[in-house]
Length: 214
Image: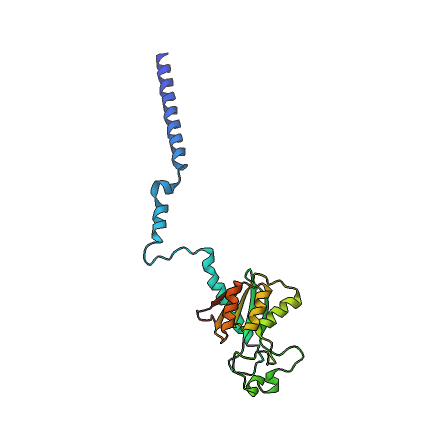
């Protein structure tokens, strides 16, 4: 009888030890390893060390999209029918990373282009660049893109306009009234009035400084 009680006591003690080990094991694995090892803190510290790139936020990737849409604006510019060398201008209106409309400088529908006529009206009349912009057969790239949006019933409110060149003051007024909030351009244009209008209207005007992707 005593032997039986002794064996029972040993068995009960073993079970208690096994249960304690099991509970300790469960408690151990329930604690995140980062708390025990500190690896999370070490990984976070690595971002501050020289030569280790910082983690990019979502907004950092907009430069990539700016480059893509600027590249497209230059592709659209190749469709221009302007007779002047170096005056091929393209425009892309984008909303939520989606292309709404495009435009390039060229004669209105049904009107012979300057290339077809073999001359530039402004050159023939000796009109300096940036003046008397209404005296030209061509519709500007920005104007064509905005007109296309109106014709197709596409909303461009709060959109971004990408253009190979800085818009003139006439295009600037249309851009403001169409609800476009951001304008990205690559090449300058001699029209200081445009800068004043955009600043007063709260439209962001930014110059694309990087090389155009190919």
